[in-house]
Length: 257
Length: 258
Image 1 (tube, rainbow over the protein chains, first blue to last red):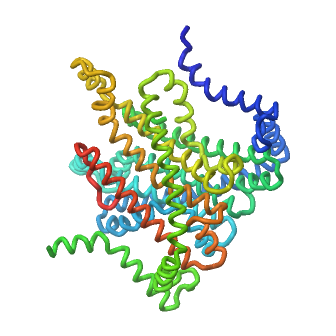
Image 2: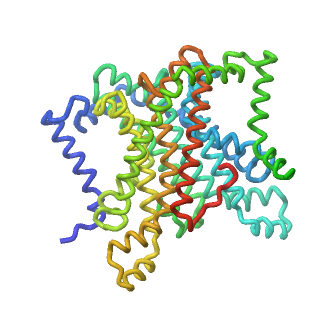
Image 3: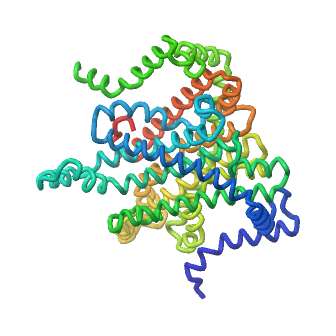
């Protein structure tokens, strides 16, 4: 008998979950690994009293704002760097040096610059977004086919039309890959910043659960954060699919869902 | 000769220029010197903490942890990706875990890691492993999948045994994909180790940054950032060199500084 692939896909996750549940109920697992049913109950608890919604809203606000600023700046500067050699030569050495540095290392400096409140979290999130987006946009601008631009110019299109109707659509697939990495970075850096020190947010909810030895609460926060990151990526991919209708058929990108 | 010098000036002028502006801003007292310590202060901190062994000690710990996590991820991830590419059952079983798990911010699970593996090195290494194994497996898997079937058929047609096909056709053809994954994962390893050290530890460069930050010793923060940047840059170049040596037939144009 052959198990259809769609069923096979579920075997490993379901087995793990069931084993976790049974192990937790039988108290075979240590206290810090509460079974999924308890985590769900805790999720329900914090969702009912509004604590979860409030924490998630704060985290979401920070990540959205930071992502928007970082991606916007990264795209603009990156496209400019691709189009203008002077801009490129200015940013290339800086970016290639700072790229491998964990952006969270700048947190002490950002805390001093922007204070302990929302601004420092948003700023460091935007900062960490900027780099992958810059690199992808720079590369995208450089790899737009010259023939496309020449053809448009030949047909007498004004510069603005060439930029918005030829150049940016041609660069769009790579702009989205950059934004996707930036989004992932934003969640990582925000989480670390919230865990190291913040008021409000899912990171704080998690460390509070930890401090009170309420591991079900800790896991509820972890699950909420993981889901938030996953959902944000999905939304970006849906937007991408709509914007790039017909552009990515048959490419490798299509495989990396 | 002159043109080459000029071209290098054009390419790298921004770093010295920024450093000059920095020094001028601090020197003229325009900027608060606590936020932007003068370059002389940063370099003196760099020298004293290198001589007294503080920076080398923390750097060695951070790099050691990153290297162990990265190596485990590479050793486990590449064969696993090959197995996923070759066997339909393994592919069906594990593909969802990798493709749906990929966009999940795994950092959220770090607190759990500290409980399972303890707060010292093991939890950080295990977490670096988790963060590295995703890009390595996914990229290597796509690399293995992209091998033209006709190459394998050709080998089989000429009577090559399975082991020869894997060693002489599959592995070389998948090498570029494998190296792409490793190159994505290497800075991830360093970043993740520093990050988790900042969240909680008593050694490593992340700890050094966090402690210097709370003591308002910003020169030390900048010094540590310089050290991390330099290490990351050197390691990436080393990996590129290794790549060019082992897949000499497909050399990537090293684009200007990126």
